[in-house]
Length: 545
Image 1 (cartoon, rainbow, N blue to C red):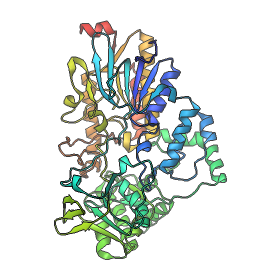
Image 2 (cartoon, helix red, strand yellow):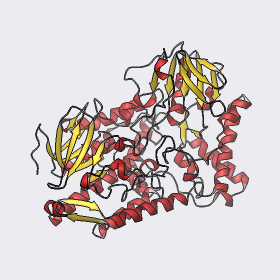
Image 3 (spheres, rainbow, N blue to C red):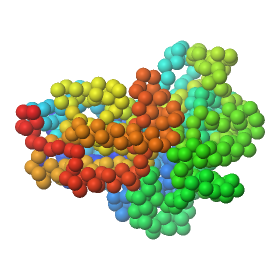
Image 4 (cartoon, rainbow, N blue to C red):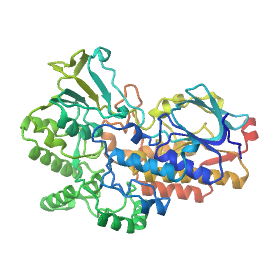
């Protein structure tokens, strides 16, 4: 194995210290490899290090959104709430880093700027923003799916005299909005979480909405000791169930019939029951075809629209908040606490920027085509260059100097979302073409890291140095991913799943939506068949070829 030192030659370099990067470090190190992790932030956490905005919270149950690889870790950690806050998730990640002594192999405040494959040696040279370079046999990208914030290029932003923030780059110190006029631009998941909290402090809150999104009541609650004991006793069953579900989340009985096979009264009762229980998975699990049949989906969408109209007192505001551009679940289905209720407050105003778009940011606030809104602070809840953004932000070059950005100029191409042709020994955790954001990200990261380890063990076993997918396997997988997506309602919505929120980005549906369970089974079958679709070689053979 390579000698680990401060000048930088390692068996594996991992980029990112979120859930995927931490687990990759733990597993690779446990397999006897020397590992260096580079993290742009000043500590571990990944998306949960950066996303500190008011109300930031996970939309997967805490017990499910956690590592499964260590039983003692499961038993010793106590989650305080059903859906964890950013602070509680970050505390958990810090605990993991300390418990497994991970920080000693992580370089913080270090951003990776380039990664170049050397065909002569079969190694990667990784460059960082401090001008240093490091070498490794394997490069593992744990850069995350929601890690490159998008601030729209609004005219005049630089002239604004007040404060402005992005939910994905929130200051580490608390931001006080007490007595201030605030404008929030964006009503996706982060906006929906932040708006009720900001409204508690602000003297005036303007919410600038282009597209209404579906949001369900989270029904969050504290976990008492009795609940935690019950959950810990059932961890093994919960984890086993998760492996056999589309979203990688156990504890939810799978649906058995179409929404159209129930009477209107029975459907209403089903939706009402699952609404009261809370959680997006349980609601989407009401019936088998909510994400594949528009008529079935309409019954669920109509139920949620009815809830919005019942909650929001002003009929005009309620209608603006009722989504009418996409099926429910085709864009990220949000969870909230008192989001719709917030619009009943006298100091909260919803601004329809689809009808009257934002023209510019002025020194005093936000100007639309029909009005000027004076604000002291602007919060951009405008999302991310998702799934591929962080990878495209690094100058990654494979065989013959091929840039990943160039290869993916018409959309990402991978085999299993894990590797891409022309980039040997280059692994992408939860990459495009894998379940990624359409599953429990912790479970998805564990599955991918374990797959990376299987590849490395296979190289050891066969006496080879290099692994990469073959073009036919990649082509067939890309076609399969597209076929599966097109059999659902997902592509019918303009969403960040398609890259629609980034001007100029290819409109390609990126996640694999055939279900985490089916994806896992396909990966296991490929491994059982001798890593079908991958080829291995020795470094000197690679140089000759």
